[in-house]
Length: 455
Image 1 (cartoon, rainbow, N blue to C red):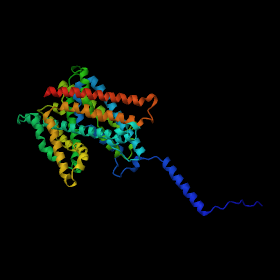
Image 2: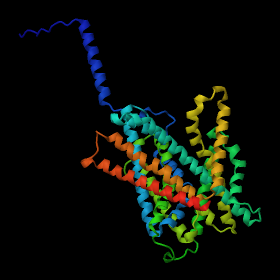
Image 3: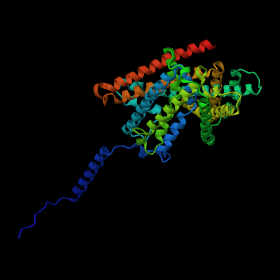
Image 4: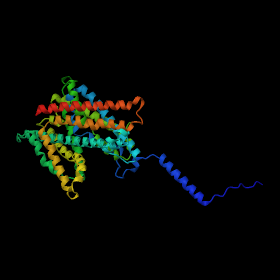
């Protein structure tokens, strides 16, 4: 018979200690192997589906900008405008893609469930190469103020559209022969109390109604564009090179919805569906580009050099259907003013609230909202030219926020990690930055010249 093999007797204490060490080692390796998935750590309130995210993006993108596209085509011509809309749309979509992809990768790196636009810019620089880390606060400030100025500029545009819409209707029905400036000032009667509403939940029901009203206004405008259109040969296929900066600026103002992209992505249950092909972003941008191109082409074909900053202002003044569209657009923009006005107020209040005693916060916010409203309406009264505002806002704010910052942010984030063969990421983003700066400088120059000529 074979004898049983003998095993050394191991004290129980050593067994327990060895077990603890093994468990610790396993736990440590498990953390290293299991990647951090941001969407699994987001609050339960973040429950937007992919279809819901697509709807939010389309709702945000198909705003006042779509009715400005005939003005953009007026600066470029039918052929150049059509090609340019596709190119600008592609560049904008790529810039948004860069920003969201960088933000998603950064969330994994710093183990954050989600990040906003300014947070992404700030943390990218904080975690970037040592020489650029000191610019992190500047990147955050630039992102915040670009966002705030963009929305303030849009508010100025809304004031002018509201004023011109009511002036046209008043003129038809024998109202007072007031200038657009006076009608801009009269908007304070509605906007001052409306902007004192501090709870967004009170505006949500009206916002849902406004979406349907806005869609109806766009359809009415398209109907008039397609009714007895002139021949294509009667319109310019291309204009002079001097019109290109205005085209790009107006296109950026109309198309760039980057301010809502990060909040929408942050609320998705499956953010991995936001990018890619076909992803939520790409589907939304294709629909937006096609819609904008169609409205711009048909609007310019119909009204030619008479195209205005809002297509509804070109509609006949003596037809009830057209007047209805103008009133609906004015009402929607009054509500839109109250909604987007939250952004600049929030940016400014976060910087001054510590200087205001806690017991006076309520009065401080009320005063800030009042002063901001008076400032915006005052600017609109000083230069009541809708087209000039759109070009200036698009040139300054959206070229910075929508193109320049995403390109710089991606370059800093990927520096020393993955810049692609022959550093193609650097070259590609350098071209985007150059395009952004050229659009900014030329757009601002032409806008200021036009403003001085109109004063």
